[in-house]
Length: 276
Length: 321
Image 1 (cartoon, one colour):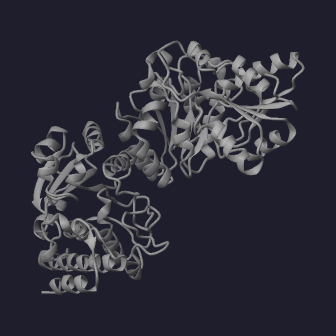
Image 2 (cartoon, helix red, strand yellow; image 1 turned 90 degrees about the vertical axis):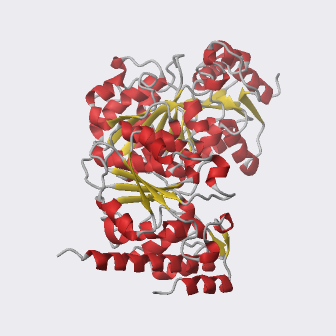
Image 3 (tube, chains in turn purple, brown; image 1 turned 30 degrees about the horizontal axis):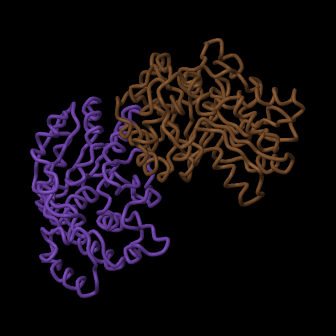
């Protein structure tokens, strides 16, 4: 019998809360880092890894696994958190972020179990994910490829090269998730270089678009259940999110795109992330 | 199946087309082969491949960054992508994708880079690639091959099947590369080929300059100068032994390449010798300038990339000029 909806949502919310706690824990170990973009992505990552992705933590190179590429690689702390919680890597790794020869620096490394590509230099992941989706089609494999991009990242023109090609090849096995938290390193994306009308841009590039509240687990799960949004087009899921979500002092400010984390800040953050 | 010895019956006369022809044999040998084009189907002569292997071909248009990123993604799924591209664009424009998605991620992506050097002379400086060797050989994990002629280009392309990592193959443009390598000799990655024995001076050359070096050697032999000619078809991994042996057994080294004098083959030789065995050297290649428009042969002569220039450099090394 399938998991009751209510129980599922409760479980995913708990995982997401744990992702947030682990993000702060990892960043404290590293002395600081990209809290804002990790926290805005936490709910979606939890839903992907604990509900949607067909992956095998004990067999990370399983050829038929679904792929997830974190193109906005600066959210590496959130990726490390879900990979640890899902059992791809040892939990203790989270206490060694940025350490000498640690598997985790500020950005993902393909050598780590469960990490599909070296990302974080922005504007790379969508093309790589498109290549994975093409690879699935050529080899007649059924896996689905997900890629998460940032909204500021969409300034990089290479994204639109990949977007154009993905719809040309009707890659319904590819989903791009935009973590639309509206803030980049220097301030509000709309004031740096605006990306609106964002949904129209993706549609114009031939993608089927759906917009959700990226922190409403019911909407997140509903969107993942609805994939592909079109049988003949790649899917774009624009998730409206809040940078720094879940911790009041980090929310909605570019100051927490990346910042130092000491014991006091860690304690304040964790206090806000207690179980309800 | 075409063997390396008889493939020329299909008539490629340029290294870029030899690469495209080799892909047909490669696909027969390796079913995971997939060819990626950046609107370069004729540039690398891959239409016969496309006709035969339509389901293992991806056209990505005039978007080099996307081509490299996608090739990396294809490689992660177990396929063996061969990217057909213009050398100037695939290196300079998509350098970050080559570095991160391919070299850093250590994916088995092979880049066939046509129109290197000033081989598209009349196209002008925007279409010349005189820094690509410097860029590619500075990347960890990357293998860099510069075939001297069509036979070597064909064999080198097949040899990439056994390379567990990214590869850059530097190919020419419209000007035909005269045959200079031994058609019967196997291609050995990272092992330089001695084309002429010699004890006075050694010319270490790559690409189109290899044939010029042979001509220079033949001219100097008549002057009583014994010039060793080494075809350094692999720039990385670099055949250190061949260079050190040449330095030990001759009175000086001349390097010759169709590339800026900074960072290419000459740079690689100089870096090695400066540390291991300081040796008299001269470097033949493109000076620190952008080329004017002109036919490739005329441009090579203007900028000192010719048999005559190599001979002069040999004389200079020996102190006789």
